[in-house]
Length: 271
Image (cartoon, rainbow, N blue to C red; front, side, top):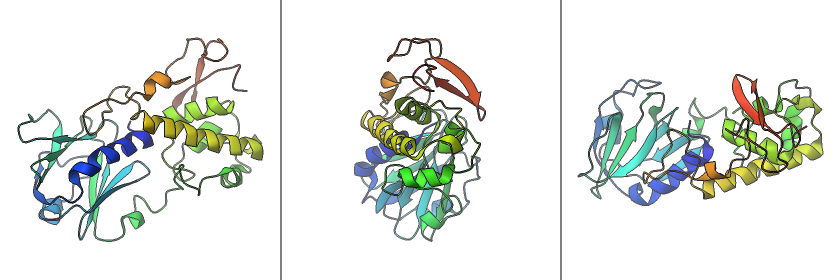
């Protein structure tokens, strides 16, 4: 699933191609996604000028003159910029034809993404308004995280993946941040000290920054708006490395199921 760095990479790739452009046509080939595409999406978007593209958690927000499009890439979706000569691909469900003669295409094999719209502040939309702070902002810090851990028996890996606590820290980046912090992923959240919370927040920010700079993590489905894969997978320490030696201490990487997700860790470096 595209996580925060992949969505941020997509946003950055789209920005210079779509902002300031008028949407001349909207083509919807498949309206059955995770949520049905609103039947008035074409009439709402057609003729509007795109004035900005932003991100909240794993959602992209394309701001128009009078509305905003809220897009989630789901499990396997991606957005790409094409020319009119570019062939339509299987699972290309939505197209925005722009005034600069480029086409924004949404491809989603599993159809678990979504496209919604609102005429109000998109951050107050029901999908977004209850989300926790962005991890790369000053709102996410050790004191905040420590306050959320108090009395919690939930595994720390599950807690930092909870979008009501902090957004955008998916399985890959939670695993890598916990490794960098030396924290076993199954540790009960309430047992973690304030000093360790400071370290974990710093590690989350560091890992996410590194992933964004690398263009995200390509495992199976993610490609940026330019069609190129991300390269952070080349820097992974534990995720997907079960049975291989730890790059730091040479101990064999192990994995267990935590909160329904496979969680890789080093039994020597993470205690």
